[in-house]
Length: 149
Image 1 (spheres, rainbow, N blue to C red):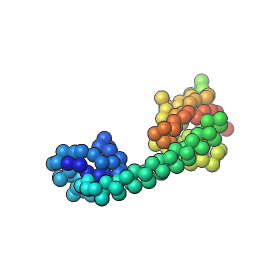
Image 2 (cartoon, helix red, strand yellow):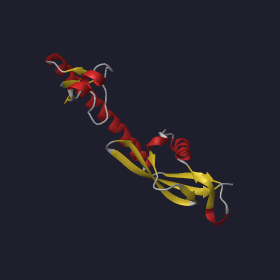
Image 3 (cartoon, rainbow, N blue to C red):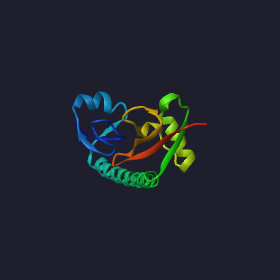
Image 4 (tube, one colour):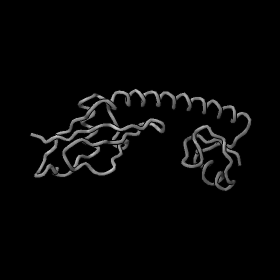
């Protein structure tokens, strides 16, 4: 059955896409849940306008993410932390700590779920933290952990 998706739906497709799905999946899940509508000629025209709007929004989001990346990549974010002997931290620097430091030092608000670290930050020094703001915009910021006090 050909249906037009009304919202992004995992592996099936994105909003406005016209997809072929199993009849039972469409009748029992997508249509009653309001996630899709049956594709007719008029609906297919509406789907094309939904895709255009999605593409414009996606381009705007990508431009915003690129602007943030241009500001954060050259910056070094300093995070003071309590340190024990041999430069080991009491605990670790969490993504929440990194987000707070970025906000206080640059004024840019990030979502902590967009940060990726290879391993927890548990020592003083310079570390790289990955940031993925958009499907096409991924970059690394430099975080320097210094002893507090």
